Structures are given as C-alpha cells and as structure tokens.
Length: 141
Image 1 (cartoon, rainbow, N blue to C red):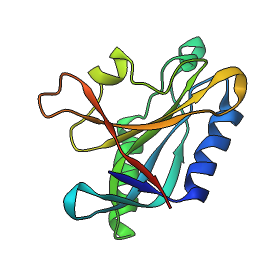
Image 2 (cartoon, one colour):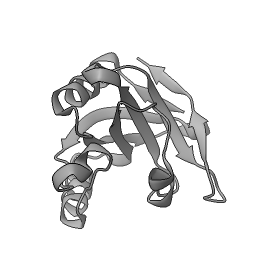
Image 3 (cartoon, helix red, strand yellow):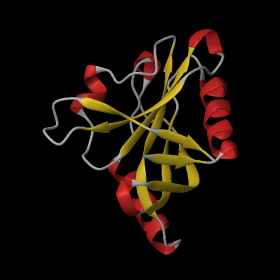
C-alpha cells in the first residue's frame, strides 16, 4: 500500500504533462511502515537520461543518480520507496520492459498521459516470484 499526499501526486502529474511526449521519471522517498504501508514524504523528480526518440517510451536513471538519491535519502532520514514514471499515450500499466527492469520491494507509480494531459495514476509492486506486477493500493492523503 502506497500513501501519497495530494500535492505530491499533483507534482508528478504536472511533471508528466511538462515532459510529454517523453516519459518523465522520479523517485518517492519516505518510510516503510507496518502492514506493508509505504508513507511518501517527498517526491524527487529525476531527469530522464534516455537519449533521442527512445525517451518517448523509456526512461533511464543512471547508477550515479541512484547513488546520489540513496545518499540524499539517508541524510534526510528517509528511504527510497519506489519510482514513478509516465506513459505518454499509453495506459498506466507496466510494460514488459518495466517488468524486466523492476526491483522487488519498491512501488512503481505510473501516470497515463493521453494527448499530453495526465490521466489515471496506478501503483504496482513486483510479485515475489518476479514474474508479474500486482496492483498496489494507492491512498491519496
């Protein structure tokens, strides 16, 4: 279960619209709570480092950026809860590529951006066998 406040979700939606027709990406920082709850405290936009036309269907967060993100989270007393990205002109459902590059334990929030306007936002978690994503309850507030 992922809890994300309304301003955080609104910021992700704005970023998705601003970067359309390319995919946007970023991280969600906060704390892991009991009963599988992830409490988001901060949204960290990350520039999509994928080059050229591939940016429209893929995002890339380089290892150096991940290291900096982990270092920042640690210094702020937070943990990386997961990542978000947009799907320009596609549903807010994970692709095969998303599945191949997912890590266990993280939330993956996807925002559909049909025609440049942010639409449905859904959160996903990798199943324990790493063969699929399961829908994750997204609580706003």
